[in-house]
Structures are given as structure tokens and as C-alpha cells.
Image: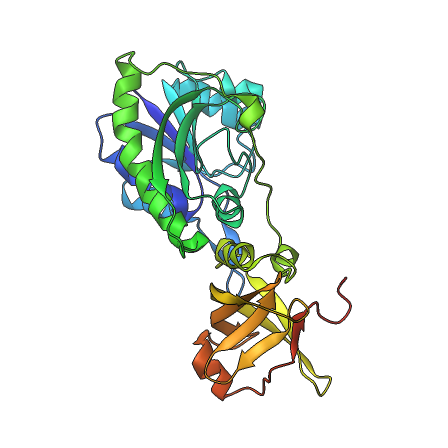
Length: 320
């Protein structure tokens, strides 16, 4: 089969590398245009472009894959399949119709669960113990196409979204070659998704990371894991003096015991940092003050004035 690959971030790079090393030639790579990055705002190529150039593959970076000139390039190549993975642009019907075997999307969940832009984060936030990757035929509705194959994996109890991101990226790369071989041989039978089982995984913004201390310790722990490293789980430390500072929470663990205190109350701040959450207790393991480096909680406590009875919660101007 002759392939075209469309992807942008580092999540998609291992799958492109696997395709390039496989038996189905990659005739073209589409990726987003270079974007400003870093303090100097220097135009920086996406990870998929950088890899494709190292592999000697042809690359184009249209502002939109749906633009007439981009569609004409695809028609000229006449690929058997277009493999899409975290490309970042919705494909219109004029693109979906070009490949002989269709446009195939690699999605980081076990569809129909977690359709949308942030499936890895939401699977952890919602307390799932299993997720995976799905190869699906793309349809006009996002992440709603028929499923060709899936690979499942367990989610670690303390695994963060960043850690799961790396594992699912590797799992997708393992899946893609054998799946395309099966497709070429006619042994992959597409099955429609069960819309009744579908859940959404909408895009996350930085403001979505605020911790709700009224949630149970387990749900709060999962929220912190699902927001790490992006967009970051945050709260404000309100000192008894009236001072407030923003904190980013990186790791936490539920501990036994009932908290007879309002949610967000600091219960212990000597050698360990314990906070009331949903009637229970949550131990903060790792955190950072905004603009500072990440630290284990014990080290952080030695350099910051925190006392039992202080409060974690919304910051100045935030809704309670």
C-alpha cells in the first residue's frame, strides 16, 4: 500500500518512524506549519516534520489540509490510505474521499470512550483503569468512524497523563504495521461504534486545572494525575496571615482517616503535607510554587511557611 501520513506532535513521531521502517511506502508527510516557540519566539518545526526530514521523506505544511492545493497534491499521489494521528486539523469530505482505502485515524483511547482532543487526560481524571489506542476509519463526525482494531493497556494507579502519553505513543507504533498488513489482506473487518457507550474528552485549557477540594481523595488524586504535566493541577495556599500563593500539585496519594475540617484545610504540615479532601485526607507528595522548580513535599515544607489550619482553595478573583 502507498501511504500518506498526517501528524504534528511528538506523540505521532514513533508511529511515523514505524511506518517508514515498514513495508508500505510513505509517499508524503503532512504536518502543521512551523510555529513560534521559546523565549525568542523562533519559528520551530513540529516534531513530525523534524523526523520526516531525517528519514528523507517528502514533507508539506499547508495551513489547511482541506485547501484545494493540498487536496490536489493528495489526488496526484493517489494513496491507498491516509494515516492521521494528532494532526490537529479536521478533515473535510473532499479529503476523506481521496484514499482508496480511506483515511485512518489513530486515536488514544478505546473508542467509543473518550472521543475528543484530550482522551489521555480524561481517562485518568475519570478514574479509568484501562485505556488503549484505536485505529478507525475517519467519518464526517470526529472520532465516530468504524473501528478497525484496538490495543488495550492498564493504567497505573499513580501514572500521570504525561507517562501514559509516552506509553500510548509507543503502543500505537507497535499496532500500526500489523494492522495495515491485516487491512491489505482483507482480514480487518470494520465495526461501527456503539454511540450509547460514547463519552467525550474535550480540549483542556490552563484554567481547567484548578483543584476542587470537595471531591474525594481518590478523585482528587486522579485529577492531579490527569492534569500532569498539562495543563497542570493548581490551587492557592491561603496563609493565616492573609497572604496567598499559587501552587502546582504534581503527585498525591489518598491516606486513611476522616478529615473533620472543611475541604482544602491543611491538616498536617510538619514532615508531611496532608489536606482535607471530600471528607477524607490527601497527602501531597510533590508540588511546586509557581515559577519555581518541582520539589518533594518534605523539601518544599522546609522552605515555606505552612501550618495546620491554613487553607488550599480558589485564588483571588476566582469563583469559589
